[in-house]
Amino acid sequence: MATTQNPILANIERFFNTLDHKIEKPVRSHLKNVYGALAMCLLAAAGGAYIHVATDLLRGNFLCSLGSLGLMLLLYSTPDTGANRNLRLGYFLGFGALTGLGTGPLLDYAIFVNPGIIVTAFLGTCILFGCFTLAALYAPDRKFLYLGGILMRALSTLVWLSLATLFWLSLANLFFQVSSMFTFQLWAGLAVMSAFVLYDTQLIIEKRRQGDTDYVWHAVDLFVDFMDIFRRLLIILSQKEQNKKRRD
Image 1: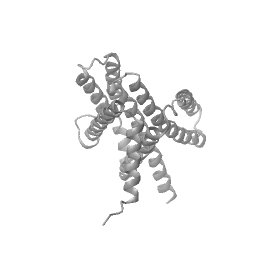
Image 2 (image 1 turned 60 degrees about the horizontal axis):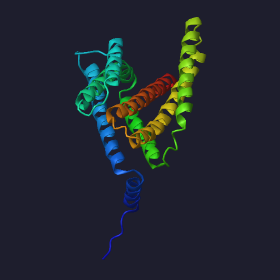
Image 3 (image 1 turned 180 degrees about the vertical axis):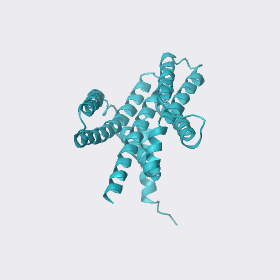
Image 4 (image 1 turned 30 degrees about the vertical axis):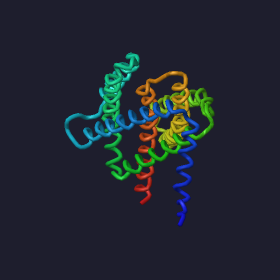
C-alpha cells in the first residue's frame, strides 16, 4: 500500500532539488566551505563572549577592537595560495574570538536588563540570516547584485547620521530627539545589514563562478553581517525591555 509523503517534507525536498539544479556542484561545494568556516567563527565568537561574561581571564575593551582589526588586516594582506588556508583560517577564528570578546560589554548590558534577551536576539538573528540566505540562493542569479551601490550609500548615510547624533548630543541634552534618531538608526541599520546578506550571498556565488575560491574571505563578509544584525537586535530588544520596565 502506497504511503503519502508529508506535504511539508515534499516541499523541502523540492526546494533542495531546485537548488541542486540551479547551483553547480563546484559552487555548492564552495558554499559548504564558506558556511563551515562561518560556523567555526561563530563558535569562536561565542567562546570569546563567554570568556568576557563568565570568567575574569579577559575583558572586552578597545584593545580587543584593535586586535580584531589587526587580524582582519593580516587576513586581507595574506593572499590565498591554497597551502596557507589553515593559517588564514586561524586569523579568521582569532578575529571571530576577539569580536565576540569585544561584544562582551553589550552582553553585560543585556544581562543587566534581562538575560533572556541574548537568547531571543541570537534566535532572531539566525532566523533573519537564514531567511535572507535562502531568499538569495533561491532567487534568480545576480538578482540582488544591483543592491551593492544602494547599500553602500545607505551605510554611508547611517555613518553620517551617527556623527550628527554625537554632534547634537555634545551641544545639548536633547534626549528625545537624540533617542529618536538613535532608534531610527538601529532599525534602518538592521534593514540594511539584512539586505547585505542577500547581496553578499549572491556575490559569493558569482565570485566562485568567476574562479575565486577564497572561502575564508567570503565567510568574513557573512560573519560581519551576522554579528551586526545580532548587535542591533540586542540593543533594540534591550531598549524595549527597559521601556517596558519604566511603564510598569
